[in-house]
Length: 133
Image (cartoon, rainbow, N blue to C red; front, side):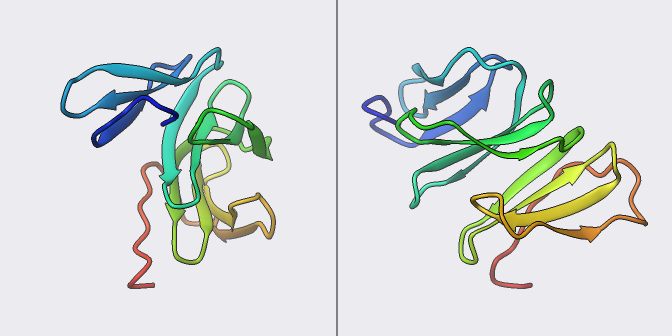
């Protein structure tokens, strides 16, 4: 996290900020500020990416761990109820409560596929297991 956390950190959203909470000292450090409504934070540590959904702008964004280079990965996503990064195949999964579906893309937002769309009712919370798929 830039030069802030020296020990394990917990990332969390205040809605308008994503902050890193230093596990050993409980000191917090801003990673990015001036957000509209950040939610559903995910990280790909070895690539240095933080992903989050913006519940007001209805998109998914990515930023480098050092706080630089905000990129909109997906626009018009609806209400994201869950976000997950699969770090081996480099895939980003998300649930969309408005459209009742689970979708996947690569980490740059390309190759979008809808995995499930007809049998869900406001899907939320998402986790992936890269070893058992």
